[in-house]
Image (tube, rainbow, N blue to C red; front, side, top):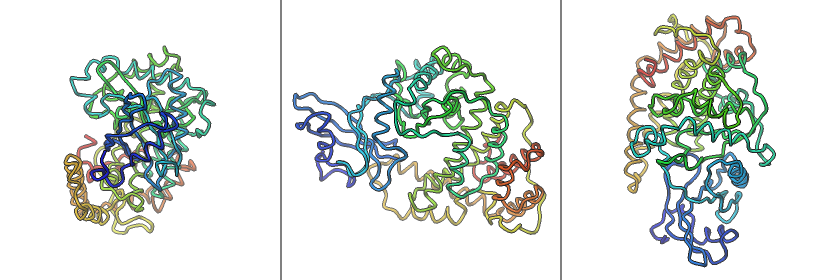
Length: 467
């Protein structure tokens, strides 16, 4: 790599040599440093390292943006990867890891480059990887059983998490109440299966974080969300609709749920049934909804201004809808979703109800500001596909604003009236009442309220999603 052609924020060969010296020797040389796409929260760089005897190794650097550490220290993630390899999980070999302020200027992890396809839509559809789809569900079950065999004490530094409490903490951290998600969480809390013994949980095991070749799954990536908790969480997360990429199979858009559960049990995992898996799918869908709120919050707070994060915020209602649909299987009570339509209109907006309610943020002024910022920024001439993708996002966001403007006042009035019918003044008060169990004896009414409210949001943000 020549410094005069490298991106301004690229790690320099000198810094990379210093980072690799302990593992590969003082004479290591570094070349061909180039950015990779796919890192949602951390930078990805490919490089080639040549050791003194002339052998070349293709590597990948994952680096925290300077001043923005990731959710887990790279040294903890490195220890986790090594423990996973010992348990039989396919993972990249770790070459080195450094904490914030090390030779790379921020936390970083260098691993062997593993060939394979990670793009979800290609894995679900492309003929080239069709052979792996035949046993995809079974192989995922086997790998998850291996992950859950990792000794909990093998990786000091992993936090213990409760999935329901974790969802609520995410929502509380942003400060944006989402009563529909709270309805799901409360219902699941009251119908919770026995969690059993806690294990290491990957936290993000899904299509998109699996490197796939025609001969099988080559590596499990992105361990930065791992924790100690209920292993059922990993099985549910794999089956969330958002990670099916348009495929028909419950397991990552590809496989059958029974084959996943049977293979997981044969490989040493606990025996789960379809109802327990349904419970977890509903919970993990709600978790993705909470994470969507959090990601939009990063944009809205100014921590990471991003048109993509803004769009994720307005798609939170998709996760709310999917969680409500999944709730049937999770609590074992089949029911009909309510018909289209909102509550009765009212001429007065209750105190405390935001003018954009029930719609999520970014609201219309925030959308317009986000799109303006995006158009004012200099385009990235080196990545035409990214520019086209972000242009599509901008167009979609403007469509959201266009649909919301003529109905904002009416929707706010209807929302205020529906809240009063439940005996609360605003969304925050409704969340408090749901968590306290004050509305447990009004289950059907509350579920109907949530479904009507989410349909109203979908009509603006994602028309037709609930068809």
